[in-house]
Length: 167
Image 1 (tube, rainbow, N blue to C red):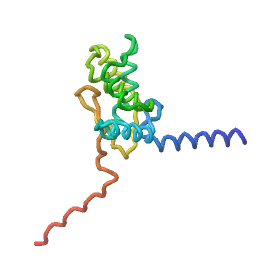
Image 2: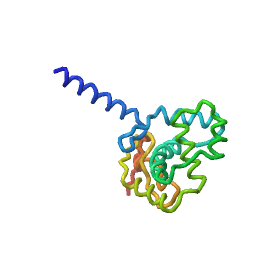
Image 3: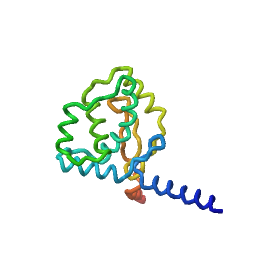
Image 4: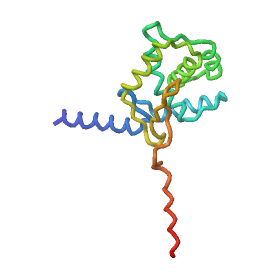
């Protein structure tokens, strides 16, 4: 009985954690709090990114890191250092965001690394909280997807169609 209760309790925690998620990538939760905190830290430092761009980069970050890891990985560069100077108390998610954006902007990924990233992206199990929209695939780099409004947008009420005039 105690075992069943523990399993139910742990299962409930997992469900609650997933409900508070902005996204889940291959089982790893990106919390709404991480997205909001990263967004706020960037805004405070005068870097103007939307929450959807923050979430896009946080989803791409581990996949990008995995793609460059076999060659020794990406090392923080001048762009990364400059941004981190403006955000002295950056959270890990903010550091992950800045690292992903810096890697993309550096344009140092080889074609093989880009292919590895795209392959990992296609295989990845990604779910996005509808509050942020949905994954919108793209054939264009650098991340090959964005997060956009769900169709139809479940938050906005749909306007009723106008009635045709009577003849």
